[in-house]
Length: 167
Image 1 (cartoon, one colour):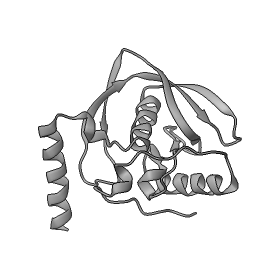
Image 2: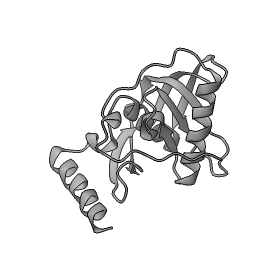
Image 3: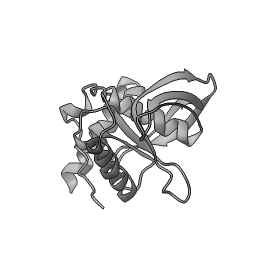
């Protein structure tokens, strides 16, 4: 098991869109393995490669009750999003100690390269959809709090900074 350190906000890697993955290689599979170990150790429902300092469009998501059902995605892209929204409290290990309720589409259809290097289309609903959208945001250089108003975003970041200084 190899866990990696999550970069602290405002690291530039978290603000920069990640590069596409050209092919699924053993190196990519090893990064995914580390990402799953890191996600499970948090524990969390997903992780994007940029969160651990790897500027590639790689993500993992596992919202299963038993765990061990992680979906590995390279170059994920949302093709369709439902009109119906779902609210969920979101957080990130890159800005620990704070969270916010974010409204996102309840269901999404996503295209990505899977672990075998095959283009896959998959529908995600509820928590799975929320987590996939959260990871795709990371890969685009966005954080969950970018969905908040400017005032709420400033308050959230200030609260996280105050908690960090108190430690």
